[in-house]
Length: 615
Ligand code: F6R
Image (cartoon, rainbow, N blue to C red; front, side, top):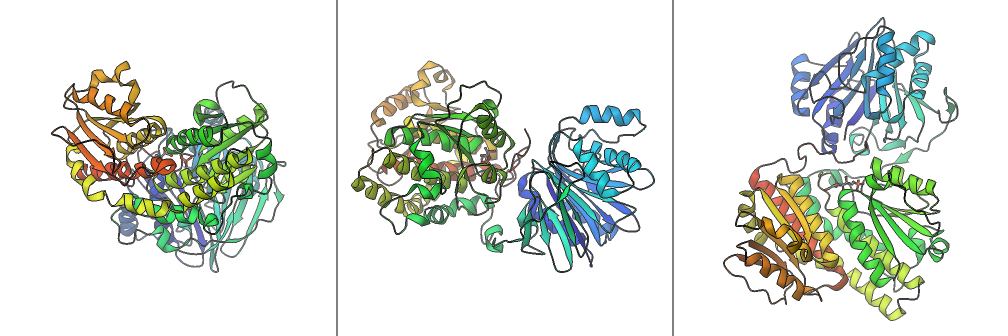
């Protein structure tokens, strides 16, 4: 979702801005633009992709020592050049703004500014920021202070970078509810919404905190925090060295990030589970130093998450209730935050998020706390994210950067972490004798290898892709803990191949969706050899009897025999608790190969963004 990169240095920064935008493309966007210093502020924008902006830059031979650039994911106003950032406020000294997030009170600010003679040239909420700063600058002739005063009036989530034509030797940036990171270089200073955009110039980074406003010049920077004082109190923020490698954020020999990330799952899971590689017993400290005490008093779990992370939560519910015997609710974060749920201080809130910046998940976790839930645990893939910072306990999945919009390795590492949580709670609740715990740890240690095996089905899955690519709809069936896996399979297919896909608990078929079955409706079934297999087989017969085309992912020992309208791919033998994790793999591969056949933009599917930092 929207990306920001800004640079101010002793050399031309336009190539840095373009490279930064390219690295931010994965976040999802529909237009792009930049402003650079060239005897004033020059602006180039396009309602297209970054490579089109690169062409404009080339045509104009754009060069400058400072600039801010942006990829926009449309919220207010359609994707168009006019709505693309940076936005200007005219007047004696032009002001340029790029913004990530949503300004909730933009309408009242817009009305106020219009009444004061400001003219708007876009439909965006972001443009009000430029004019508001211009307005404040009339009250207080100090650009930094004017930004502070303007920001104090904004409601909603934002990360912004601002430049003033009269003083192009500085860039002002502010963060509230959307990530923003400073890059401290030898010959310049930088800002971006994502570390990956900064690595081209520096590894020394500062994660700005809520309410921080910073001023950057080519040789210095200073930061104030405005949470308690509109004009800010100076703060020191630690400079971290980023250890992200270019290999981690590059494509290597893969055609797409999604493909790379699917195949990285054995190592991503191995990294996430590294702490159990030499142990026979798990301690709650894995989740934070206070976890032992908190878990002892935990009577119930409430999982909050969105999308794929929500599916991970749904799987975990089965594990937590079955193995740890602890009641568990799982809620879509965007729904939870607007309900009036009954709170319980003894319920541990578990927020799951790849990015740790998902607005709904953050808001839901904080709402749960406000309602009276005492403790929260974040399961997240981004160490410096807001979610990690705001939770009481934390577990970092170590999937490495996930760049493909469709989440893959984040999901399986979330599941691995949730299994660790299950084992920990089961043990603390005296539901897991030492021998069983050792067995479970051994099973978990085997997971990376089991994932490697599961990936071997790729050529078989690829053979199915052609059939799906011709269809407009697909149905995914699963039962028990594999039902959320069916949901995840359907989500993957719809988001990258644009085929409408729905998941049903197979037992629900006859309560409605059976009416959809005909030879145009492929039905994908997840059929592990567990205690529900016979029930599932009956459901599959219901489909066959109505002329449906079945695509079944079974275990090696299941007695499902392929026939004309029944296609079967077998994984290895039934993997017990690990089974839902392994059954995810062929579904990811199916979505990927169907998308390839359809020729969609696998890594950047239309309309979607990677980190959903707005509501
Ligand atoms: C689907 C997908 C999304 C995310 C959702 C939550 O492939 O990626 O559904 O899972 O937007 O994002 P995080 O996990 O970052 O909170």
